[in-house]
Amino acid sequence: MGRGRVQLKRIENKINRQVTFSKRRSGLLKKAHEISVLCDAEVALIVFSTRGKLYEYSSDSSMEKIIERYEHYSYAERALTMAEPESQRDWFLEHGKMKAKIESIQKSQRHLMGELLETLNIKELQHLEQQLENSLKHIRSRKNHLLFDSIAELQKKEKSLQEQNELLENEIIEKEKARAVAVQTQWEKQSQPQTSSTSTPSFLITTESLPTLNIGYLQTSPSNAHSN
Image (cartoon, rainbow, N blue to C red; front, top):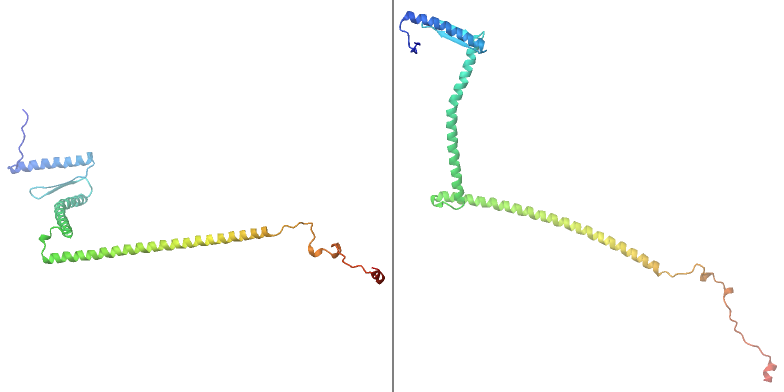
C-alpha cells in the first residue's frame, strides 16, 4: 500500500524537530541552487532556526542587491494596490461633481428659457432678470457691430464701383474724342476741290495769252460830211 497523505503540523518532539529541520534545510538550499542554475533565475533564500541562527543562499554574489530589488518591487506593488481604491474614490467624487454641475447648467438654461420659474424667489428672479438684460446688451452690441461692418463693406464696394464707372466714362470720352477727330479729318479731306495736275494756276496766266477786244470809231473828213 502507498503512503497516505502526511498532515503537516508542528513536530512536538524537540529532537525529531531539530533533525527534520536540518534535513529539510539542506534540501531547500539544494533546490534553490538547482532552480537558479537550471532556470537562470535570481534566487535568494533566508532561513532562521528556532534558536535564531541564520541560514541563507543567494544566486547573486550580493544578497543585499536581491533584497533591494525585492523591496523596490514590493513597494511599487503596494503603492499601486493602495492607489487603486483612492483612484476609484476620486473618480466617483469627480463623477458626482460633474453630474451636479450638468444639472445646475440645465436648470439655469431652463430658467433663461422662462421655465420652472415658480421655484425661484424674488431675489433669484431679480438676478435672472439682470442676467437677461446683460445678455441683451451683449447681443445688441454684437448685432450693431456686425451691421456697422456690413455697412462699411457695402460703402467700400460702392466706392470701388464708382471708381470703375469713372474709369469707364473716361475711356468712353477719350474714344469719342478720337472718333470725332477722325471724322473731322475725313470731312476736311473730302471737302477739298479736285484739280487737274496739268492746269495752270490763275496767277501764272499772262495777258498775252488772253483774247483781246478792240473797240474804236471811224474818223471822217469834213468834206465827206458836207456831201452827205
